[in-house]
Length: 140
Image (cartoon, rainbow, N blue to C red; front, side):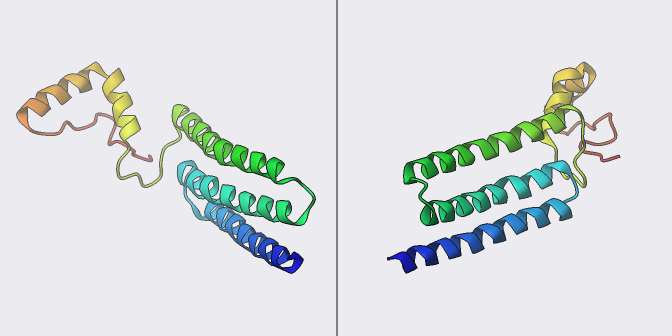
């Protein structure tokens, strides 16, 4: 039984390390904060959970404590990524090579009354309004 638990722990360490390395690679390779958050936020949580699983299997840490830590990581990781992404959007960090940015378009419609009036007139005419800022998601 001990050999089986050690095998599970070794596989979990290898998989967790691989996920963590993929997260670091994604962080290095991705062009902006939003895609970096996607790469690191999702992959890193899985990597740490697998490493914690190996720790629970190999050490006298009780299963309950390990489960609580895993649940906190699974809940806290996406919340943290969302908070960082939301803060980046609020301070105006642009997306690189954005094809579509719905958040900026909603903010533009909410704050620019001229744009909102053109959007309503163009919608009635069956066309799409042209943004006044040089294009939604324009990096610059």
